[in-house]
Image (cartoon, rainbow, N blue to C red; front, side, top):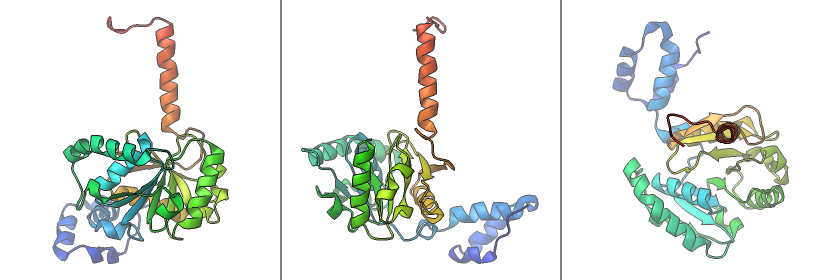
Length: 261
C-alpha cells in the first residue's frame, strides 16, 4: 500500500520547488516519491529537533578525535573531554592531522577547528551540549559510571550516544536516571571520512530517541543504519570478524591468488 501523505509537508518548500518536484514524479509511485524528494528538500534544521549547535565528545582517543574532527568540519561547536594526561594536546594534534582530509571532502558552513574547546571534567563538558558522542573505554563498569555521570549533568533533552564497538546499550543504560535517551551510534572507522553509522537502541531506549539520532546523523551527512535487535559486536564488526577468520584460514591453508601472497 502506498504511504499517504498530507500536502502540508510542503510548508518548508517554495511553490516553484513543489512544481518542479511534481513534474519529475511518475504517477504510478507518486506519493512515495513525493515523500522521499520533499524530505531531502526540506531544510536540515527542520529534520531534527531540538536543533543541535553544540556537540560534546566524551573520550578523545582515535575514534573520539575523529568524531570531533567531523563535527567541527560540519560547523558545530565541539566540547571535548578526556581525563587522561596530555589528552588535549593529543586531540588537537590528531585534529590537525585529520583536517586536510575533511577539507578535501568539503567543509560545512562555519566549519573551523578553532570551535573546539576542551574541558577535563566530563560533567562540565556536557552541561550545555545538545548531543553527546561518548567514546570511553570498552569496559562495562567504566561505561556505566560514565553514562550515569553524563546523564546527571546533561540537559534533559540531550541524547547520549555511545560509540561502543561491542557493549550492548542494555548493559549500561540503566545506570542513567533517564535511560530512554541512551543509545548506540557506532561509527565505521574513521568517522571523519566514512559515513556509515550503526544505530540501535537498548531495552529502555525510546523510539523517539532512535528517530532523533537517525535524523541528526542523516542531516549532517552520515548514512545511519538502523539495527532492530541488539547483538554483541553489532553487525559490521561481526561481518568483519567473519571475513578475518576466513582470511586467516586461507593463509593457514596456504591458499594463494594469482601468484600474490
